[in-house]
Image 1 (tube, rainbow, N blue to C red):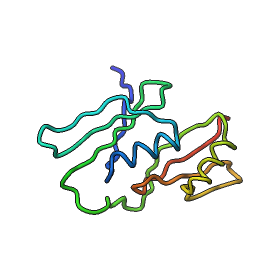
Image 2 (tube, rainbow, N blue to C red):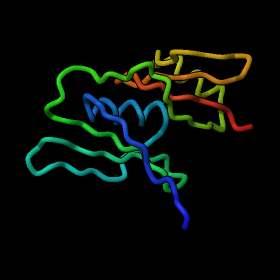
Image 3 (cartoon, rainbow, N blue to C red):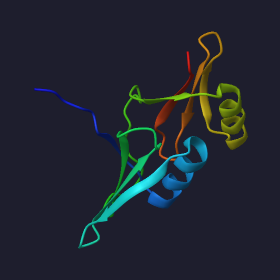
Image 4 (tube, helix red, strand yellow):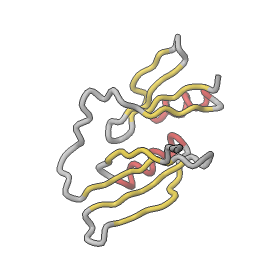
Length: 122
């Protein structure tokens, strides 16, 4: 028996705002969308185009207020082939929320407060 990771999910307050952020910050594109017939939720799967792994963005119509991310100790990591250019883009976007120069990594924060780790190819 084998298993393959296929996607992770995060809930978002505004699908279009999140799609714009993930496209600009990480080059991720929508690969498919699904809306509930009654309009109660929408699922949008985004991917970086390099493999089969996707990030599922879920919007819930009846959710009021921001999501409670607890201590926000969970994160998703992204490796980049141009760390300096990525850092410059994210600095310009104002989304860098933590940086460890000694370890050569940093985190960006998406519109809903999720932290995304950025690391160079090693």
